[in-house]
Image 1 (cartoon, rainbow, N blue to C red):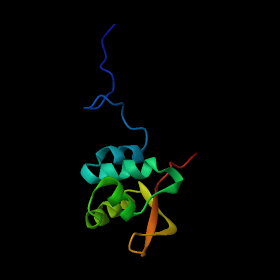
Image 2 (image 1 turned 120 degrees about the horizontal axis):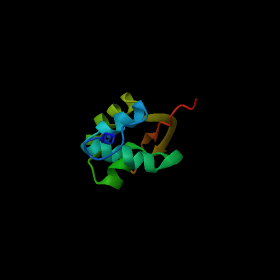
Image 3 (image 1 turned 90 degrees about the horizontal axis):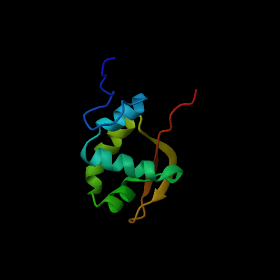
Image 4 (image 1 turned 90 degrees about the vertical axis):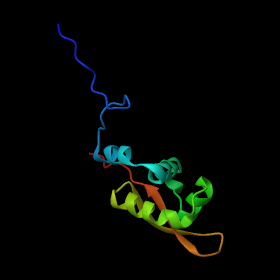
Length: 101
């Protein structure tokens, strides 16, 4: 009988089961923080300005982060908007759910 190493990555996690999970693991810095925040908000989702306030990150820094997350299909625009503190309408994003099936 031979010993076989468990199939774990560098951080001791099992390999990702989906492309989305693999993409999420590659996120670094603000992208990971923002993704986890949006994921935690469930169907309510969040706007850039809400994320900036909740995470103490400059709103201007989040434009590219939201764009990158959307391009990776980790978040999506719901089509809804919410007012920002300044009264402007902001797009609402939610985490993308895995396709069933």
